[in-house]
Image (tube, rainbow, N blue to C red; front, side, top):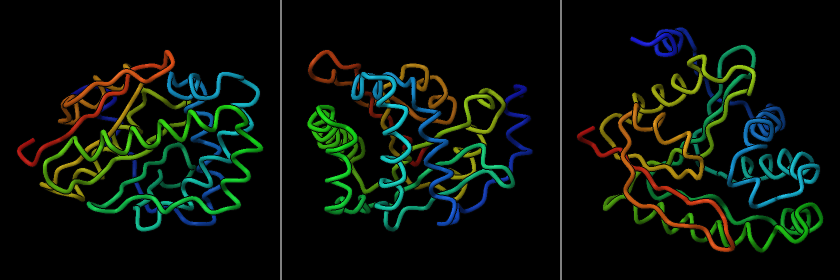
Length: 205
């Protein structure tokens, strides 16, 4: 057993309280600030630093029936799990207006990516599947088993049900494969964007 796997056994995962959504969104913003997808979507670093926490908070609020979890005690990691057949609620008018103000010219690109990623996830499994959405660990705590605990706890909860996820960060592929996921499709993003990979864990995994 690796050191990270051993540490993951000692990380407790609990439901994320609604009053901590802003805190979780700030963590997501820090964790994804240098992610290839977000660097492509929002190239301006200062704009990305300001916009991501706001955008992630709106996204968490729009997840509806999703299961949101975090590390117990200090919030050092978060994950979102969407049950089969459940998709995020459409953004409110306030969210759309706020996105125009904050994301500026990056908004059309984000909208196109959102549509394409949803299609990739639907095609990743022949049967309705859980979706492992955003998973993030505080940058200073990465590599210490927190991400593995968030994924493992969720997989134990859903049992034999199929699970799909999407990533544009090649560093996430090996991590996901260690948890039983396999790449089922790869698509280049338009306008010189990074590739996107859809991964699935079948019931047999």
